[in-house]
Image 1 (tube, rainbow, N blue to C red):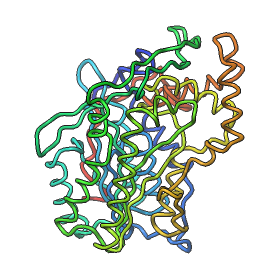
Image 2: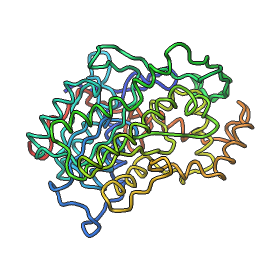
Image 3: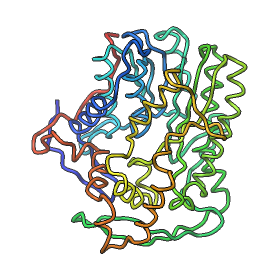
Image 4: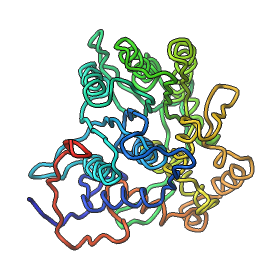
Length: 410
């Protein structure tokens, strides 16, 4: 087994390598922090839980959905992600290592979880999942969580490849943003983003909208794999008025609107087909590999943490609440648009007012007193397994971690 000392190499918020031991401790820490639901409150015994499919299971809210589902709802089933194996010059991706750790957590908890490494947009992956559901999980799926953020998608019907873009709609947009120099010193800059042009909106909707989610449901329903009462949730985000021009009112926002419209269509179909439900779950802000790529969001997250501190609700905590609603442990509570809202702690008027006040005061000279920069900086590093308490980064660690073949003795 290859071992080496892994040191962080990064270009801005993007890191070139990941730390296997750090990624494992991130997963183990999330697991320890998640509340369990005891048997008298409805948790299933080992091996008897509902069958779930989590699409996008290795990072961000998808990882949180997987771990919260295992511990909170006692799920078994399948996780799908698209990760890179390590090689002679690069470690594997952080998601590769997190998946290996999640498989070990599932096995120790007595949960039968399979993990597939492949393109969630491809029909071959959908067919592989359908076969696995029949062969290993009794041919019935109870829940599907859709958490996919991707730069490109190839339509299986036409072969056309679409590319998503992050642009405002209608006019260019200038916003403050947070960057760190090579020494880690923060700087507030203003950046301009050109508006969408041509078919940018349509391309982004084709990648990040509801088309693939609906295709998954079509594929599984056509093979009679949806259990009675089947529920599905696509994870989404609305965000603050401070980031709205580039996010919710931009190209990505158009994709999110399409995702929510798809939920309403699917909800009608599933109600008639299996007495099921389809919803979007609007989650609160979090530091993820996707969110750090959006101008202004890094600054917003640091300021939000400065306002709320530990009152920020973690992705795992939010997804525990979602699983309670999907499994009936608590009532399914929807807003007027048919969405589960897990972001109310973030978007309350007093919180947003406090963040806005800090936003307008934020300069390179003042930012340290307005935002929790240490927290944000460490959260970014933890995405790749660095800055994790309890990990000895001076010690050599195994890097050629195998992809999990199975769980629970299979």
